[in-house]
Amino acid sequence: MADIGFRSFLDDLDKAGELKRITKPVDCRQLSALGEQSDQATMFENIEGYPDWRVATALVSTRKRLGIAMGCTENRIAFEFEEKSSKPIDPVLVDSAPCQEVVMEGDDVDLTTIPLPLMHLFDGGAYISGTFAVSKDPEHGSNVGCYRLMYRTPKETGIDLVSPSDMRFYYQRALDKGEPLPIAIAVGVHPLDMLAASYKAPIDTNELALAGGLRGEALEMVKCKTLDLEVPADAELVLEGELLPIGWTADEGPFGEFSQISGDVKWNPIFRIKCITHRKNPIFYMLQMPWENDWLAAPVTEAAGLQALRVASVQPVDIRAPVGGCGYWALIASIKKRPGEGKNAVAALLSVAEVKYVVVTDEDIDIHDPDELDWAIAFRVQADEDAVILKGARAKHIDPSVKSWELGKGGLPTTAKLGIDATIPEGVPPILYRRIKNYGRDRIKLEDFE
Amino acid sequence: MSPLATKIKTALEAEAQQFHDVVDDHMDVPWPEFLRAWGELREIDILKRDDEGAYFVEAS
Image (cartoon, rainbow over all chains, first blue to last red; front, top):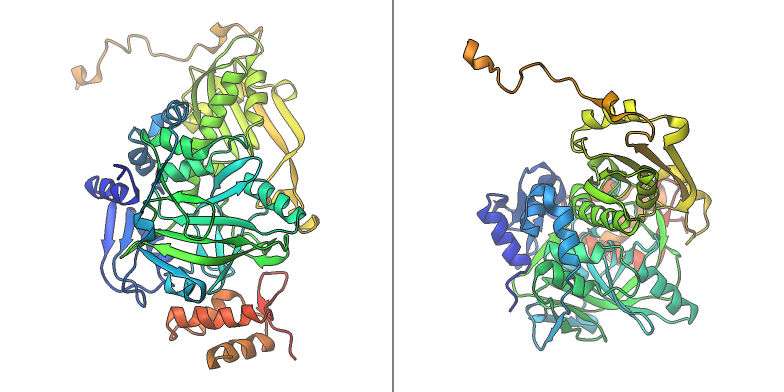
């Protein structure tokens, strides 16, 4: 078996003092509210009505815990992700797997045997929030992504497929032929696998090999029981089934989104489940919104930003996807600038997926210090020259300002993006930016005079 | 239809409710049982949504 897995990560959190265990009985309607109040990741050991199950949540809802998953410090996460993702390792197929210790097929399929939580006040139902979803296209091969599932019946869920994604593309191709799209949903995999799944890669990128690169070892996969798909062998739970060829017609949501907004009702396909497999004594993973999703998103967005800067021949010094932008919508970067590269960097970063707001500054600015950043914007920016607006770019439905309700069912919104070049303008002598420094500050010490 | 599903259906015929309101009214019901009853209503496709996401059932 591989050294790295969902349970080994729980052990890592435990050793770091980052895992709280709750042994008192907890109802599925209480899980989310309790997990949100804990400053540690939480393991619920005693779930009312589900004696064989435990529930784990908020495993990477801080950047510190994501650093534990990545095996690095918080400020190195983006660079670590970039480096490891450049060394993919192909997955390996194994014959048997813990995720198939228990198998329910046909009439035995029953989602109510799984502790599905009611997470947020305005959610449209109980949800499975943290998934590793596998699909396959005859031309483009396997794809992995993260999609939420809303309970509908013991054998059906809704699935959020409103945003552009490879699986949406696969589904559309199957729908055009009037065929269902087989998919498999794994729940309870290592955060590195979730990072790989959420990476916005070109369609032919093998996210499973990316997961191997992040792990530093091959991801072990096993054939599904009823589908021509493979899933991570060490997952806690697997749902095998198909997206019905009904298009975007079934109500789904609202759900507490990673944008920190409750969202609205979406129109989506239905996932019909044919087989459920899981470990003996399984652990259900409840991805806690929004922070766990946001911190999983941040390094992916940051690494995409680094890649965009390097493709544009701009040398990055530091980058961050701030919490205010929920890890998706904003990027702040400092660069070693040559003439014109402030604008090149802004253009490059605005090209990253859903990034809507960008600030680029010089290497002398600590981009993790908001006061430093404000200072750079105040004194290095002329709005009529350094603010860049890009209209008609791709957007996400959950941003209310794109007015997605004006679209038809299945329609895709667009947005305007803002970039600010807060680097020292060309032609301004750098001497004008010398910072105040007290005379003798390096050698005159206050303690010598107290 | 189970008695619990019938009860929920009757309530949603009377007025639209958010999912959490329906849940609040049945906190004494074990969660798996509640989900099975909800699934019964889904299976016969009678649950509708209003503009705020509340569920309702059109009176027959």
